[in-house]
Length: 283
Ligand SMILES: Cc1cc2nc3c(=O)[nH]c(=O)nc-3n(C[C@H](O)[C@H](O)[C@H](O)COP(=O)(O)OP(=O)(O)OC[C@H]3O[C@@H](n4cnc5c(N)ncnc54)[C@H](O)[C@@H]3O)c2cc1C
Image (cartoon, rainbow, N blue to C red):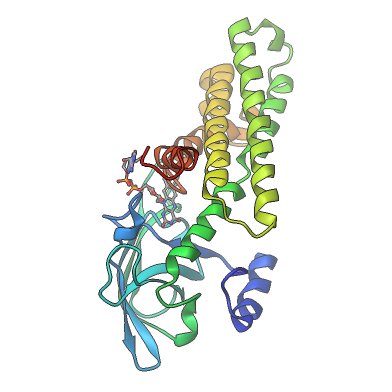
């Protein structure tokens, strides 16, 4: 929205977002359009001055608690990237139905969202009509570096020593080495994230730079989760304030498993990096 919104859209939406007063969800993925997002089938047809949107989204994080949705829909008869347009709609608009998907992330995280002839005003369009692919690329490039899980990983790894005292020094050397490697992975992820933010601050949207950071962050997430679970053992499954690290181990482990899928899978991130290194040729 900062990059593509009109002045009126920015004035209306950015202050409550910055204040944390509203929750937005992101309607990109569809049942047949995940990694291959350009094949999305949700459609928007003109209706007077505005639009009517019909289709289905899936894996929409926090849709059940969101006030607004930014979603991608196709305008016109184009295929692939042609016609994809971004719309911003309030989640309480008639015609929107949210169905939770039960998953190991908990009952409120993932959802299906159905759009049944949902009305949207002319001012609901973010960016150009048909210009949605650029908006999606920009949003994903920022999302891929915006989830600072390396910070949480470092905090948990640091807290592990105190948690295990006086047994920390009796841990097998192999596990202590895994702890060190995890910390190195965390620091590498942090530096790659900082590099990406630095490049993005100049206004550039380098997909491969953001993907490199995302690969590093998701891998440090999973490496850290494995080290924590190995060190805490079965007590890592405990929850609540009296559990080791206040129950963060089990929660961290579950979320880390999904990290290499959300925001685009790690395989797709590797393809993006490979294509940039190979100069655009197919990897
Ligand atoms: C926790 C979580 C939160 C999410 N939140 C949201 C959200 O808020 N909004 C939203 O729109 N989506 C969200 N998603 C969906 C996510 O973006 C998709 O799951 C992801 O893009 C993969 O799409 P898919 O599930 O359709 O899998 P597919 O695209 O069907 O992929 C299946 C497998 O094939 C592999 N694959 C596919 N294409 C290639 C290729 N070209 N080369 C190599 N391997 C390939 C993939 O890596 C994967 O392993 C979320 C997902 C998760 C797990």
